[in-house]
Length: 590
Image (cartoon, one colour):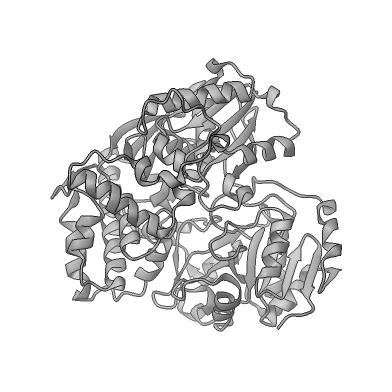
Protein backbone atom coordinates (compact mmCIF):
# COMPACT_ATOMS: atom_id res chain seq x y z
CA UNK A 1 0.00 0.00 0.00
CA UNK A 2 1.40 3.38 -1.08
CA UNK A 3 0.35 6.43 0.94
CA UNK A 4 1.20 10.02 0.03
CA UNK A 5 1.30 12.58 2.83
CA UNK A 6 0.63 16.24 2.01
CA UNK A 7 0.94 19.43 4.00
CA UNK A 8 -0.07 22.49 1.97
CA UNK A 9 0.04 25.20 4.62
CA UNK A 10 2.97 27.04 6.17
CA UNK A 11 6.26 25.19 5.56
CA UNK A 12 4.60 22.79 3.14
CA UNK A 13 5.96 19.43 2.10
CA UNK A 14 5.27 15.81 1.20
CA UNK A 15 6.08 12.31 2.39
CA UNK A 16 5.79 8.91 0.74
CA UNK A 17 5.18 5.58 2.51
CA UNK A 18 5.05 2.06 1.14
CA UNK A 19 3.67 -0.73 3.34
CA UNK A 20 4.27 1.38 6.43
CA UNK A 21 7.86 2.27 5.50
CA UNK A 22 8.81 5.91 5.00
CA UNK A 23 10.52 6.12 1.61
CA UNK A 24 11.15 9.89 1.45
CA UNK A 25 10.04 13.15 3.01
CA UNK A 26 10.81 16.60 1.68
CA UNK A 27 10.01 20.23 2.47
CA UNK A 28 8.90 22.27 -0.52
CA UNK A 29 11.23 25.14 0.36
CA UNK A 30 14.25 22.95 -0.37
CA UNK A 31 13.32 22.85 -4.06
CA UNK A 32 11.49 26.16 -4.51
CA UNK A 33 14.36 27.94 -2.66
CA UNK A 34 11.81 30.10 -0.81
CA UNK A 35 11.87 30.00 2.98
CA UNK A 36 8.73 28.66 4.67
CA UNK A 37 7.05 27.79 1.38
CA UNK A 38 3.26 27.86 1.52
CA UNK A 39 0.86 25.95 -0.73
CA UNK A 40 0.43 22.71 -2.65
CA UNK A 41 3.91 21.07 -2.57
CA UNK A 42 4.02 20.01 -6.20
CA UNK A 43 7.81 20.10 -6.47
CA UNK A 44 8.45 17.90 -3.45
CA UNK A 45 5.67 15.48 -4.47
CA UNK A 46 7.10 15.08 -7.98
CA UNK A 47 10.61 14.75 -6.60
CA UNK A 48 9.89 11.98 -4.12
CA UNK A 49 7.72 10.06 -6.59
CA UNK A 50 10.46 10.20 -9.23
CA UNK A 51 13.18 9.31 -6.74
CA UNK A 52 11.29 6.19 -5.66
CA UNK A 53 10.14 5.18 -9.17
CA UNK A 54 6.49 5.50 -8.23
CA UNK A 55 3.85 7.01 -10.49
CA UNK A 56 0.84 9.04 -9.40
CA UNK A 57 -1.45 6.21 -10.50
CA UNK A 58 0.16 3.84 -7.97
CA UNK A 59 -0.90 5.92 -4.98
CA UNK A 60 -3.57 4.10 -2.94
CA UNK A 61 -4.53 6.86 -0.51
CA UNK A 62 -3.62 10.43 0.38
CA UNK A 63 -3.33 11.72 3.94
CA UNK A 64 -3.56 15.50 4.30
CA UNK A 65 -2.73 17.52 7.39
CA UNK A 66 -4.81 20.42 8.70
CA UNK A 67 -8.55 20.39 8.07
CA UNK A 68 -9.10 24.14 8.27
CA UNK A 69 -6.59 25.88 6.04
CA UNK A 70 -7.24 29.65 5.86
CA UNK A 71 -7.98 30.65 2.24
CA UNK A 72 -6.68 34.19 2.85
CA UNK A 73 -3.23 32.99 3.93
CA UNK A 74 -3.04 30.52 1.06
CA UNK A 75 -3.99 33.19 -1.50
CA UNK A 76 -1.11 35.48 -0.49
CA UNK A 77 1.37 32.76 0.54
CA UNK A 78 1.63 34.57 3.85
CA UNK A 79 4.76 33.08 5.42
CA UNK A 80 6.59 32.81 2.12
CA UNK A 81 5.92 36.23 0.67
CA UNK A 82 5.84 38.38 3.81
CA UNK A 83 8.68 40.69 4.74
CA UNK A 84 9.12 42.09 8.23
CA UNK A 85 7.24 45.21 7.12
CA UNK A 86 4.36 43.08 5.80
CA UNK A 87 3.92 41.51 9.23
CA UNK A 88 3.81 44.97 10.80
CA UNK A 89 1.34 46.08 8.13
CA UNK A 90 -0.79 43.05 8.95
CA UNK A 91 -0.97 44.16 12.58
CA UNK A 92 -1.64 47.83 11.87
CA UNK A 93 -3.96 47.64 8.87
CA UNK A 94 -5.84 44.43 9.60
CA UNK A 95 -5.75 43.25 13.22
CA UNK A 96 -5.75 46.66 14.90
CA UNK A 97 -8.75 47.79 12.84
CA UNK A 98 -10.62 44.54 13.53
CA UNK A 99 -9.82 44.26 17.24
CA UNK A 100 -9.60 47.86 18.42
CA UNK A 101 -11.74 49.76 15.89
CA UNK A 102 -14.34 47.01 15.24
CA UNK A 103 -14.07 47.53 11.50
CA UNK A 104 -15.02 44.83 9.01
CA UNK A 105 -11.74 45.00 7.15
CA UNK A 106 -10.90 42.31 4.59
CA UNK A 107 -7.49 40.68 4.74
CA UNK A 108 -7.31 40.34 0.96
CA UNK A 109 -8.02 44.05 0.55
CA UNK A 110 -5.04 44.84 2.76
CA UNK A 111 -2.78 42.51 0.77
CA UNK A 112 -4.45 42.61 -2.65
CA UNK A 113 -1.10 43.13 -4.39
CA UNK A 114 0.10 39.78 -3.07
CA UNK A 115 -2.82 37.65 -4.26
CA UNK A 116 -1.62 34.82 -6.48
CA UNK A 117 -2.63 34.49 -10.10
CA UNK A 118 -4.90 31.59 -11.06
CA UNK A 119 -2.05 29.52 -12.51
CA UNK A 120 -0.30 29.44 -9.13
CA UNK A 121 -3.36 28.61 -7.07
CA UNK A 122 -3.84 24.95 -8.08
CA UNK A 123 -7.18 24.86 -6.23
CA UNK A 124 -10.49 26.12 -7.65
CA UNK A 125 -11.50 29.10 -5.51
CA UNK A 126 -14.73 29.80 -7.40
CA UNK A 127 -16.88 28.02 -4.80
CA UNK A 128 -15.02 29.26 -1.74
CA UNK A 129 -17.47 31.76 -0.23
CA UNK A 130 -15.03 34.11 1.48
CA UNK A 131 -11.47 34.48 2.75
CA UNK A 132 -12.29 32.49 5.91
CA UNK A 133 -14.35 29.69 4.32
CA UNK A 134 -12.52 26.67 5.74
CA UNK A 135 -15.03 24.05 4.59
CA UNK A 136 -15.07 25.42 1.04
CA UNK A 137 -11.28 25.43 1.07
CA UNK A 138 -11.13 21.81 2.20
CA UNK A 139 -13.55 20.80 -0.55
CA UNK A 140 -11.43 22.63 -3.16
CA UNK A 141 -8.31 20.87 -1.90
CA UNK A 142 -9.95 17.45 -1.99
CA UNK A 143 -11.35 17.92 -5.50
CA UNK A 144 -7.97 19.04 -6.81
CA UNK A 145 -6.16 16.05 -5.29
CA UNK A 146 -8.78 13.71 -6.72
CA UNK A 147 -8.34 15.15 -10.20
CA UNK A 148 -4.56 15.56 -10.10
CA UNK A 149 -3.90 12.03 -8.84
CA UNK A 150 -6.92 10.38 -10.57
CA UNK A 151 -7.98 9.12 -7.17
CA UNK A 152 -11.46 8.60 -5.71
CA UNK A 153 -12.30 11.32 -3.17
CA UNK A 154 -13.10 8.57 -0.67
CA UNK A 155 -9.39 7.72 -0.59
CA UNK A 156 -8.37 11.24 0.44
CA UNK A 157 -8.31 11.79 4.19
CA UNK A 158 -7.87 15.02 6.19
CA UNK A 159 -6.45 14.99 9.70
CA UNK A 160 -6.42 17.53 12.49
CA UNK A 161 -3.33 19.76 12.66
CA UNK A 162 -2.41 18.89 16.25
CA UNK A 163 -3.23 15.24 15.79
CA UNK A 164 -0.62 15.18 13.01
CA UNK A 165 1.93 16.83 15.33
CA UNK A 166 1.13 14.30 18.06
CA UNK A 167 1.30 11.17 15.89
CA UNK A 168 4.50 12.39 14.25
CA UNK A 169 6.19 12.54 17.63
CA UNK A 170 4.64 9.28 18.84
CA UNK A 171 5.53 7.05 15.92
CA UNK A 172 8.66 9.04 15.12
CA UNK A 173 10.20 7.99 18.43
CA UNK A 174 9.93 4.34 17.46
CA UNK A 175 9.31 3.11 21.01
CA UNK A 176 5.60 2.35 21.35
CA UNK A 177 4.31 1.88 24.89
CA UNK A 178 1.33 2.76 27.03
CA UNK A 179 3.02 5.03 29.55
CA UNK A 180 3.75 7.97 27.29
CA UNK A 181 2.34 11.48 27.15
CA UNK A 182 2.51 13.50 23.94
CA UNK A 183 2.40 17.29 24.19
CA UNK A 184 1.86 19.58 21.21
CA UNK A 185 2.33 23.34 21.35
CA UNK A 186 2.50 25.86 18.53
CA UNK A 187 1.20 29.16 17.18
CA UNK A 188 -2.05 27.52 16.17
CA UNK A 189 -3.75 25.14 13.78
CA UNK A 190 -7.32 23.85 13.36
CA UNK A 191 -8.50 26.09 16.19
CA UNK A 192 -6.01 24.89 18.82
CA UNK A 193 -2.51 25.77 19.97
CA UNK A 194 -1.93 23.27 22.81
CA UNK A 195 -2.94 19.63 23.30
CA UNK A 196 -2.22 16.67 25.58
CA UNK A 197 -2.42 13.04 24.42
CA UNK A 198 -2.06 9.79 26.38
CA UNK A 199 -1.04 6.60 24.58
CA UNK A 200 -3.11 3.43 24.89
CA UNK A 201 -2.89 0.34 22.66
CA UNK A 202 -0.95 2.31 19.99
CA UNK A 203 -3.71 4.90 19.86
CA UNK A 204 -3.42 8.39 21.27
CA UNK A 205 -6.27 9.67 23.40
CA UNK A 206 -6.68 13.44 23.35
CA UNK A 207 -7.30 14.44 26.98
CA UNK A 208 -6.92 18.22 26.63
CA UNK A 209 -7.15 20.74 23.83
CA UNK A 210 -7.21 24.52 23.97
CA UNK A 211 -6.72 27.64 21.92
CA UNK A 212 -5.52 29.79 24.83
CA UNK A 213 -2.16 28.06 25.32
CA UNK A 214 -0.70 31.20 23.78
CA UNK A 215 3.00 30.56 24.43
CA UNK A 216 3.81 30.16 20.74
CA UNK A 217 1.83 33.27 19.79
CA UNK A 218 3.40 35.34 22.55
CA UNK A 219 6.89 34.31 21.45
CA UNK A 220 5.98 34.95 17.82
CA UNK A 221 4.85 38.51 18.40
CA UNK A 222 7.70 39.36 20.76
CA UNK A 223 9.92 38.33 17.85
CA UNK A 224 8.10 40.88 15.69
CA UNK A 225 8.24 43.59 18.37
CA UNK A 226 12.01 43.07 18.49
CA UNK A 227 12.24 43.72 14.75
CA UNK A 228 12.62 40.11 13.57
CA UNK A 229 10.42 37.92 11.35
CA UNK A 230 7.85 35.83 13.21
CA UNK A 231 7.65 32.09 12.46
CA UNK A 232 11.25 32.31 11.25
CA UNK A 233 13.48 34.18 13.70
CA UNK A 234 12.25 32.99 17.09
CA UNK A 235 15.53 31.10 17.47
CA UNK A 236 17.35 34.45 17.34
CA UNK A 237 15.35 35.67 20.33
CA UNK A 238 16.26 32.47 22.18
CA UNK A 239 19.94 32.96 21.34
CA UNK A 240 19.84 36.57 22.52
CA UNK A 241 18.15 35.56 25.79
CA UNK A 242 21.21 33.50 26.73
CA UNK A 243 23.25 36.65 27.39
CA UNK A 244 21.16 37.62 30.42
CA UNK A 245 22.28 37.42 34.04
CA UNK A 246 19.66 35.01 35.31
CA UNK A 247 19.58 36.19 38.95
CA UNK A 248 19.47 39.90 38.14
CA UNK A 249 16.50 41.99 39.29
CA UNK A 250 16.88 43.96 36.08
CA UNK A 251 14.48 41.68 34.19
CA UNK A 252 11.69 41.42 36.73
CA UNK A 253 9.48 44.15 35.26
CA UNK A 254 9.39 42.56 31.79
CA UNK A 255 8.97 39.08 33.24
CA UNK A 256 6.03 40.24 35.35
CA UNK A 257 4.29 41.63 32.25
CA UNK A 258 4.20 38.14 30.73
CA UNK A 259 3.40 36.26 33.93
CA UNK A 260 0.40 38.41 34.82
CA UNK A 261 -1.43 37.54 31.58
CA UNK A 262 -1.44 33.74 31.18
CA UNK A 263 -1.00 30.97 33.73
CA UNK A 264 -2.10 27.45 34.61
CA UNK A 265 -4.74 25.74 36.70
CA UNK A 266 -3.62 22.14 36.91
CA UNK A 267 -3.07 20.90 33.36
CA UNK A 268 -5.19 23.69 31.84
CA UNK A 269 -4.14 27.12 30.69
CA UNK A 270 -6.07 30.02 32.18
CA UNK A 271 -6.10 33.76 31.69
CA UNK A 272 -4.96 35.75 34.70
CA UNK A 273 -5.67 38.85 32.68
CA UNK A 274 -7.42 38.42 29.34
CA UNK A 275 -5.78 40.72 26.82
CA UNK A 276 -7.16 41.74 23.43
CA UNK A 277 -4.13 40.69 21.42
CA UNK A 278 -0.50 39.64 21.77
CA UNK A 279 1.12 42.33 19.65
CA UNK A 280 -0.23 45.73 20.62
CA UNK A 281 -0.66 44.85 24.28
CA UNK A 282 2.93 43.71 24.78
CA UNK A 283 4.30 46.42 22.50
CA UNK A 284 2.75 49.09 24.73
CA UNK A 285 3.58 47.39 28.03
CA UNK A 286 7.20 46.73 27.08
CA UNK A 287 7.82 50.22 25.73
CA UNK A 288 11.16 51.51 27.02
CA UNK A 289 12.48 48.04 27.92
CA UNK A 290 15.77 46.93 26.33
CA UNK A 291 15.80 44.30 23.58
CA UNK A 292 17.96 41.91 25.62
CA UNK A 293 15.69 42.35 28.65
CA UNK A 294 12.63 41.47 26.58
CA UNK A 295 14.38 38.45 25.01
CA UNK A 296 15.34 37.07 28.40
CA UNK A 297 11.91 37.69 29.90
CA UNK A 298 9.92 35.89 27.19
CA UNK A 299 12.36 32.95 27.24
CA UNK A 300 12.30 32.72 31.05
CA UNK A 301 8.51 32.94 31.07
CA UNK A 302 8.28 30.15 28.48
CA UNK A 303 10.63 27.91 30.46
CA UNK A 304 8.84 28.51 33.77
CA UNK A 305 5.34 27.84 32.49
CA UNK A 306 6.40 24.77 30.50
CA UNK A 307 8.13 23.33 33.57
CA UNK A 308 4.96 23.83 35.58
CA UNK A 309 2.73 22.42 32.83
CA UNK A 310 4.79 19.29 32.25
CA UNK A 311 5.07 18.80 36.02
CA UNK A 312 1.31 19.08 36.50
CA UNK A 313 0.66 16.64 33.66
CA UNK A 314 3.19 14.19 35.10
CA UNK A 315 1.53 14.32 38.51
CA UNK A 316 -2.04 13.98 37.20
CA UNK A 317 -1.38 11.02 34.88
CA UNK A 318 1.57 9.45 36.74
CA UNK A 319 3.70 9.67 33.60
CA UNK A 320 7.36 10.66 33.40
CA UNK A 321 8.12 9.90 29.75
CA UNK A 322 7.15 12.66 27.32
CA UNK A 323 7.11 13.41 23.63
CA UNK A 324 7.07 17.08 22.61
CA UNK A 325 5.96 18.18 19.14
CA UNK A 326 4.85 21.38 17.39
CA UNK A 327 6.74 24.59 16.71
CA UNK A 328 7.45 25.49 20.36
CA UNK A 329 9.26 22.15 20.78
CA UNK A 330 12.09 23.65 18.73
CA UNK A 331 13.08 25.82 21.70
CA UNK A 332 16.16 23.87 22.82
CA UNK A 333 16.66 25.90 25.99
CA UNK A 334 13.14 25.12 27.20
CA UNK A 335 13.46 21.40 26.45
CA UNK A 336 16.72 21.38 28.45
CA UNK A 337 14.92 22.80 31.48
CA UNK A 338 12.11 20.25 31.13
CA UNK A 339 14.53 17.32 30.93
CA UNK A 340 16.37 18.56 34.03
CA UNK A 341 13.14 18.43 36.06
CA UNK A 342 12.86 15.70 38.70
CA UNK A 343 9.33 15.01 37.42
CA UNK A 344 10.60 13.99 33.97
CA UNK A 345 12.51 10.82 33.05
CA UNK A 346 12.73 11.44 29.32
CA UNK A 347 11.59 13.80 26.61
CA UNK A 348 11.70 13.02 22.91
CA UNK A 349 11.63 15.86 20.41
CA UNK A 350 11.54 14.51 16.83
CA UNK A 351 13.58 16.01 13.99
CA UNK A 352 11.69 18.98 12.54
CA UNK A 353 8.82 19.05 15.08
CA UNK A 354 7.24 22.12 13.43
CA UNK A 355 4.88 22.22 10.47
CA UNK A 356 7.50 20.79 8.10
CA UNK A 357 6.71 17.33 9.54
CA UNK A 358 2.91 17.49 9.24
CA UNK A 359 2.86 15.47 6.01
CA UNK A 360 4.56 12.58 7.84
CA UNK A 361 2.24 13.01 10.81
CA UNK A 362 -0.78 12.81 8.53
CA UNK A 363 0.32 9.41 7.21
CA UNK A 364 1.01 8.20 10.75
CA UNK A 365 -2.57 9.21 11.60
CA UNK A 366 -3.88 7.28 8.61
CA UNK A 367 -1.87 4.14 9.41
CA UNK A 368 -2.83 4.20 13.08
CA UNK A 369 -6.53 4.89 12.61
CA UNK A 370 -6.89 2.25 9.90
CA UNK A 371 -5.07 -0.26 12.11
CA UNK A 372 -3.02 -1.46 9.17
CA UNK A 373 -1.08 -4.52 10.30
CA UNK A 374 2.41 -3.53 9.25
CA UNK A 375 5.54 -2.17 10.87
CA UNK A 376 5.51 1.63 10.80
CA UNK A 377 8.73 3.54 10.11
CA UNK A 378 10.12 5.69 12.88
CA UNK A 379 12.32 8.80 12.58
CA UNK A 380 15.40 7.48 14.37
CA UNK A 381 17.27 8.01 11.11
CA UNK A 382 16.57 11.62 10.04
CA UNK A 383 18.24 11.27 6.62
CA UNK A 384 15.04 10.59 4.68
CA UNK A 385 15.37 13.09 1.84
CA UNK A 386 16.69 12.55 -1.67
CA UNK A 387 20.01 10.95 -2.61
CA UNK A 388 22.09 11.70 -5.69
CA UNK A 389 24.48 9.77 -7.93
CA UNK A 390 28.08 10.46 -8.96
CA UNK A 391 26.78 11.22 -12.45
CA UNK A 392 24.77 14.12 -10.99
CA UNK A 393 28.13 15.84 -10.44
CA UNK A 394 29.33 15.66 -14.06
CA UNK A 395 28.54 19.35 -14.54
CA UNK A 396 31.14 20.47 -11.98
CA UNK A 397 33.92 19.79 -14.49
CA UNK A 398 32.78 22.88 -16.42
CA UNK A 399 33.13 25.28 -13.46
CA UNK A 400 35.75 27.97 -13.96
CA UNK A 401 38.34 29.23 -11.45
CA UNK A 402 38.31 26.09 -9.32
CA UNK A 403 40.44 23.00 -8.81
CA UNK A 404 38.63 19.68 -8.48
CA UNK A 405 40.05 16.40 -7.25
CA UNK A 406 39.01 13.25 -5.48
CA UNK A 407 39.65 13.47 -1.76
CA UNK A 408 39.69 11.49 1.48
CA UNK A 409 38.38 11.95 5.01
CA UNK A 410 41.97 12.51 6.14
CA UNK A 411 42.63 15.32 3.66
CA UNK A 412 39.38 17.10 4.52
CA UNK A 413 40.07 16.73 8.24
CA UNK A 414 43.54 18.24 7.79
CA UNK A 415 42.14 21.26 5.96
CA UNK A 416 39.60 21.77 8.76
CA UNK A 417 42.31 21.46 11.42
CA UNK A 418 44.28 24.24 9.71
CA UNK A 419 41.40 26.66 10.28
CA UNK A 420 39.62 26.46 6.93
CA UNK A 421 35.82 26.08 6.93
CA UNK A 422 34.50 23.54 4.43
CA UNK A 423 30.98 23.12 3.07
CA UNK A 424 29.93 19.48 2.94
CA UNK A 425 27.37 18.12 0.49
CA UNK A 426 26.84 14.38 0.76
CA UNK A 427 25.25 12.42 -2.06
CA UNK A 428 23.40 10.45 0.61
CA UNK A 429 19.82 11.57 1.45
CA UNK A 430 19.54 15.01 2.99
CA UNK A 431 18.54 15.41 6.63
CA UNK A 432 14.93 16.15 7.49
CA UNK A 433 13.96 19.30 9.36
CA UNK A 434 15.48 22.76 9.92
CA UNK A 435 18.79 21.57 11.42
CA UNK A 436 21.79 20.72 9.27
CA UNK A 437 23.03 17.33 10.48
CA UNK A 438 26.21 16.98 8.47
CA UNK A 439 24.98 16.10 4.99
CA UNK A 440 24.22 19.73 4.07
CA UNK A 441 26.53 21.57 6.45
CA UNK A 442 29.32 24.10 6.68
CA UNK A 443 31.96 22.60 8.96
CA UNK A 444 34.84 24.17 10.85
CA UNK A 445 37.36 23.66 13.65
CA UNK A 446 35.53 24.38 16.94
CA UNK A 447 38.79 25.15 18.77
CA UNK A 448 39.33 28.43 16.93
CA UNK A 449 37.22 31.28 18.31
CA UNK A 450 37.98 33.56 15.35
CA UNK A 451 36.32 31.07 13.01
CA UNK A 452 32.98 32.54 14.17
CA UNK A 453 33.74 35.96 12.68
CA UNK A 454 35.04 34.40 9.48
CA UNK A 455 31.86 32.37 8.94
CA UNK A 456 29.55 35.21 9.97
CA UNK A 457 31.25 37.88 7.87
CA UNK A 458 32.25 36.03 4.73
CA UNK A 459 29.82 33.15 4.49
CA UNK A 460 26.64 33.11 6.59
CA UNK A 461 26.06 36.81 7.33
CA UNK A 462 24.46 35.77 10.64
CA UNK A 463 23.57 37.93 13.61
CA UNK A 464 26.65 38.42 15.75
CA UNK A 465 25.08 37.09 18.96
CA UNK A 466 24.02 33.70 17.54
CA UNK A 467 26.09 30.70 18.66
CA UNK A 468 27.10 27.82 16.41
CA UNK A 469 26.41 24.17 17.18
CA UNK A 470 28.74 21.17 17.48
CA UNK A 471 28.57 17.72 15.92
CA UNK A 472 30.07 15.28 18.43
CA UNK A 473 31.02 11.65 18.12
CA UNK A 474 28.33 9.82 20.06
CA UNK A 475 30.86 8.07 22.27
CA UNK A 476 32.52 11.36 23.29
CA UNK A 477 29.38 13.24 24.27
CA UNK A 478 29.46 12.47 28.01
CA UNK A 479 33.14 13.34 28.18
CA UNK A 480 32.56 16.82 26.74
CA UNK A 481 29.22 17.89 28.22
CA UNK A 482 26.79 17.23 31.01
CA UNK A 483 24.42 14.85 29.26
CA UNK A 484 21.13 15.00 31.14
CA UNK A 485 19.70 11.59 32.11
CA UNK A 486 21.68 9.80 29.36
CA UNK A 487 19.57 11.57 26.75
CA UNK A 488 20.54 10.88 23.16
CA UNK A 489 20.52 13.98 20.98
CA UNK A 490 20.98 13.08 17.30
CA UNK A 491 18.83 15.94 15.92
CA UNK A 492 20.02 19.02 17.89
CA UNK A 493 16.70 19.26 19.72
CA UNK A 494 17.99 19.86 23.27
CA UNK A 495 20.84 21.98 24.63
CA UNK A 496 23.34 20.89 27.28
CA UNK A 497 25.93 22.54 29.53
CA UNK A 498 29.52 22.08 28.36
CA UNK A 499 31.96 20.75 30.95
CA UNK A 500 34.36 23.39 32.23
CA UNK A 501 37.53 21.73 30.90
CA UNK A 502 36.08 21.63 27.36
CA UNK A 503 34.62 25.14 27.10
CA UNK A 504 37.87 26.58 25.75
CA UNK A 505 38.64 23.49 23.69
CA UNK A 506 35.46 23.84 21.60
CA UNK A 507 34.79 27.53 22.26
CA UNK A 508 33.54 28.33 18.75
CA UNK A 509 30.64 25.87 19.18
CA UNK A 510 29.58 27.06 22.66
CA UNK A 511 27.22 29.89 23.55
CA UNK A 512 29.63 32.72 24.51
CA UNK A 513 27.74 33.67 27.66
CA UNK A 514 25.73 30.81 29.18
CA UNK A 515 28.22 28.13 28.01
CA UNK A 516 25.57 25.80 26.64
CA UNK A 517 25.50 24.18 23.22
CA UNK A 518 22.95 22.53 20.95
CA UNK A 519 24.82 19.35 20.02
CA UNK A 520 24.28 16.65 17.46
CA UNK A 521 25.44 13.24 18.65
CA UNK A 522 26.78 11.53 15.53
CA UNK A 523 26.24 7.78 15.30
CA UNK A 524 28.33 5.54 13.05
CA UNK A 525 25.27 3.39 12.48
CA UNK A 526 23.11 6.25 11.23
CA UNK A 527 25.66 8.36 9.32
CA UNK A 528 28.93 6.44 8.84
CA UNK A 529 30.46 8.95 6.37
CA UNK A 530 30.04 11.94 8.66
CA UNK A 531 31.14 9.88 11.66
CA UNK A 532 34.35 8.83 9.89
CA UNK A 533 35.16 12.44 8.96
CA UNK A 534 34.85 13.59 12.57
CA UNK A 535 36.89 10.58 13.68
CA UNK A 536 39.71 11.60 11.32
CA UNK A 537 39.54 15.14 12.72
CA UNK A 538 39.85 13.68 16.21
CA UNK A 539 43.02 11.77 15.21
CA UNK A 540 44.63 15.10 14.29
CA UNK A 541 43.28 17.32 17.09
CA UNK A 542 42.26 14.90 19.86
CA UNK A 543 38.81 16.55 19.72
CA UNK A 544 35.92 14.48 18.34
CA UNK A 545 33.88 17.59 17.54
CA UNK A 546 33.22 19.75 14.48
CA UNK A 547 31.47 23.10 14.38
CA UNK A 548 28.39 22.57 12.23
CA UNK A 549 26.12 25.19 10.70
CA UNK A 550 23.66 24.85 7.85
CA UNK A 551 24.91 25.07 4.27
CA UNK A 552 23.00 28.04 2.90
CA UNK A 553 23.40 31.74 2.32
CA UNK A 554 21.64 34.13 4.68
CA UNK A 555 17.87 34.06 4.22
CA UNK A 556 17.87 31.00 1.95
CA UNK A 557 16.79 27.42 2.73
CA UNK A 558 19.46 24.77 3.23
CA UNK A 559 20.88 23.63 -0.11
CA UNK A 560 19.08 20.66 -1.60
CA UNK A 561 20.68 19.46 -4.83
CA UNK A 562 24.25 19.64 -6.20
CA UNK A 563 23.54 22.74 -8.30
CA UNK A 564 22.30 24.57 -5.18
CA UNK A 565 25.52 23.61 -3.41
CA UNK A 566 27.71 24.90 -6.24
CA UNK A 567 25.72 28.12 -6.57
CA UNK A 568 25.91 28.89 -2.84
CA UNK A 569 29.59 27.92 -2.71
CA UNK A 570 30.55 30.23 -5.58
CA UNK A 571 28.57 33.17 -4.12
CA UNK A 572 29.93 32.70 -0.61
CA UNK A 573 33.27 33.44 1.02
CA UNK A 574 34.03 29.72 1.26
CA UNK A 575 37.29 28.44 -0.15
CA UNK A 576 36.47 24.72 -0.07
CA UNK A 577 33.51 22.50 -0.96
CA UNK A 578 33.51 18.80 -0.15
CA UNK A 579 30.86 17.34 -2.47
CA UNK A 580 30.42 13.60 -2.89
CA UNK A 581 33.97 12.26 -3.07
CA UNK A 582 35.37 15.48 -4.56
CA UNK A 583 37.10 18.47 -3.05
CA UNK A 584 36.57 21.75 -4.89
CA UNK A 585 38.92 24.65 -4.17
CA UNK A 586 38.58 28.20 -5.48
CA UNK A 587 41.71 29.34 -7.30
CA UNK A 588 40.81 33.04 -7.09
CA UNK A 589 40.06 32.98 -3.34
CA UNK A 590 40.94 36.14 -1.39
